Amino acid sequence: MSALPPSLVLPSETRIVAPRDLAVAGELANRIVAMVEDREGYAQRYGVDPGFAFPDANWAREPVGEFIRSYRRVAVCDEEAVGGLRAFSMIFSGYALYEVRLAHGVTGFSSLEPYTDKVIAERLIEGNGPYVERWSAMTADIPIDCWFRPPRRFGDIGHDMRGVIVNHDTVVYQERINLIHSSGLFEWLTRLAARNGGFNVLEIGGGYGALAYWFKTAFPHCSYTIVDLPESLLFSSLYLRLSRPDLAMGWGVDPVPYGVRFVPNYMAQRLQEPVSLVINTLSMSEMSRLQVDTYLSLMKAHWLSGEGFFFEQNQDNRHAGLLCAREIAAEFFPFGRNLGSASTGLLQGSANLWGFQPLLPSPQGEPAPR
Image (cartoon, rainbow, N blue to C red; front, side, top):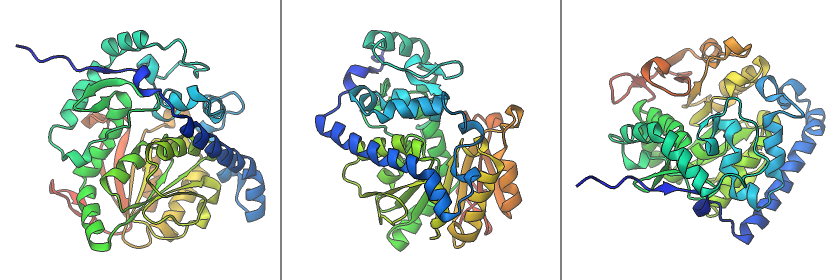
């Protein structure tokens, strides 16, 4: 007797929004809009270079670019925007979730009304199979603590595999978590948490908040900071605040011990405490050289001045007139190791681990942090 095929997770199950969540979302949107509106004034008051403070390079396509269009749509925080937050997040993953295909050529969604359960089911059956197979292989030999389990809300869709909603975005975040595990970082952070009672993580460009969600599940006592364009903070704030109302959260530079802190990028230079791990995925190769240099200089001067490491996974975007983050990071860090690339089967760019101190052997016998 053959096993039953996995069931589908469809919008009618995950788009549901409680009235209290809409009220919270509206308050968050007001907070983020105020951050966006204060950007120019803040830069003038504190002498922040506008080239660093404002969206640039691949993110500087006002007023009609997908980034700003998506931000403005979600900032309304009506039932569709909050309930379908994941469908509006393709600017971060490069994947049009409800089209079940890569986002190239797909314009932003003004309405999710056409995306019924029937339409989504047909597209998932036709196009989601490769991600189901890849996810099954990726989770076969890692601890269950290293599984990314997205919350069943925000309009997420996919195949239900052992209680996990599996789609392209689940797979690419699982890829990053697998790299954190195989590099030795997971084991090192576990020892660090046991020794110190916790540790600090700073993520540059948190996307819609998925990696922070996993970290706060796997390491409840870590303190997590997301530094991002304030428009992007709208997405990660909504995702984390509504899915994890139990967590302490703050917006601005004041510390939030064992919680999550959302810091607009133009305030980054006021963050001077050391952290154990800095993370960036996909966005550094989409920034300007000034922005990348500023972040790497902050790592050298403050964030990674003690024991700590930089994990990044980025595409080489020089063919598009943008940057290759790996090449620039190599200019700053005396120690580094490539963790994999497209040639070794990774979906989203080259992954690398960097440090200002030597990297010691990992469980696989390769260099990893001490």
